Amino acid sequence: MKIRFLMLLFSIVISLLTIWKPAAAISGTTPNDSLFSQQWGLNNINTVGADINILEAWDIEPGDPNVIVAIIDMGFDLTHTDLQNNIWKNPGEIPENGIDDDQNGYIDDIIGWDFVNQSEGYEDDGNDYKDEDNDPTLSQSSHGNEVFGVIGATMNNAIGIAGVTGRCKMMLIRAGYINTQGKAVLSGAAIIKGIIYATDNGASVINISSGSNKYSNSYHDVLKYAIDHGVVITCSAGNEGSNTPVYPAAYNLDGLISVGASTDEDQPARFSNRGDWVDVSAPGQHIVSTMNNDRYGQIHGTSFSAPIVAGIAALLVSHYPDWTPAQIHDRIMATVDVLESLKDANATSGRVNAYRALLNTDINDAGNTGGGNNATNDAEQPAPGVSANDDGGGGGGGCFLSITRESAIDRILPKGVFE
Ligand SMILES: [Ca+2]
Ligand SMILES: [Ca+2]
Ligand SMILES: [Ca+2]
Ligand SMILES: [Ca+2]
Image 1 (tube, rainbow, N blue to C red):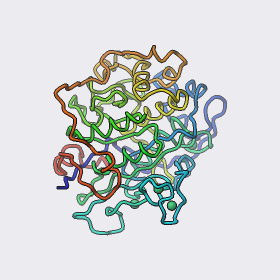
Image 2: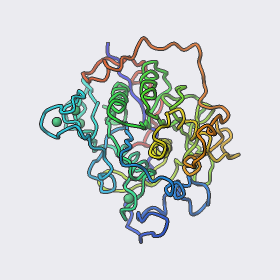
Image 3: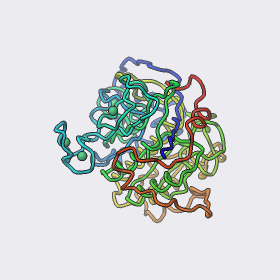
Image 4: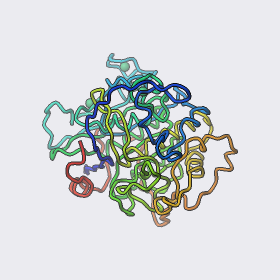
């Protein structure tokens, strides 16, 4: 039996398709990207200090091009000038020869994969709902590009923005589509396959900016599979302004970082979910990022807070390649700027600080920070096996997840806030 499972995006686009004119390049210690002065989350020129301290972090580690971040999201526009240089290329795959050269189970997977495979209720109208393929593009939503830009827009190329890493490479995994009601949703089955693909093909970090209130043993176990294989997971806490746990962010895994949104004045964003099941806050309001069709826009949502932490995790992997996901998780939590304003926002009462995370202190110093990623549930039993192998091969295999399409759509998607 195939159970459809849909996840929802955690973003609110407040200024669609804004096109900025290039500004004069900034020189000195800042990168010359023309919109960098508006990237308050990286370097706040109005409320000084309410940022992740990226300039000092980059002095230590700007990111290793060999480190791969997988973005599991709606879909992407690969033509964006500020993104295309940082798209991962599968070194073992010869493009367009119809052969699975690296024998990973995916033919001509040169930049990632499109796991969307909606077999029921979707006509073939050109928007590619059916059948997995090697092309993770989606023209109908900019959400994937927005996440990509926050993590990994090309830095110091004189245009647009700089990603937190700016140099690491992004593996692009499409799991989303516009449903029959015209809403942007992600398939849980596709996400799970994407996590396995990313893990098995070299990703060090996976960002997931979507979720729902439903606990799934299978989803939990596939994330554990990724972490056990050295992958750090970053997840958005969601935008309901609620304490109710949202998954995958709330899965209790040491190696999964749950991220809420903070503002340019280091306040908790009103829309951000909160509570001890959230690990940290990161900038998530008035974020400038890349959109489809070579545009830039201003957006907000925890969808863009998790990618900031994904970028910091990628910097840590670049600089401390031997660290485990648990160590990276603990270090990021242990080095937040603790703020009274965030005491109810998350387990650390803090907003992430990339510089402090990278400082060369003994890993053993990066210890406990209060609550940790808690919400422990000892009664919980592992699923009778997510079978990573069975799931990973494509082929539509039933996904065991228990949320229904109706509940997902009705719960999270308020009218008019999604592209
Ligand atoms: Ca292949
Ligand atoms: Ca090939
Ligand atoms: Ca496709
Ligand atoms: Ca740029």
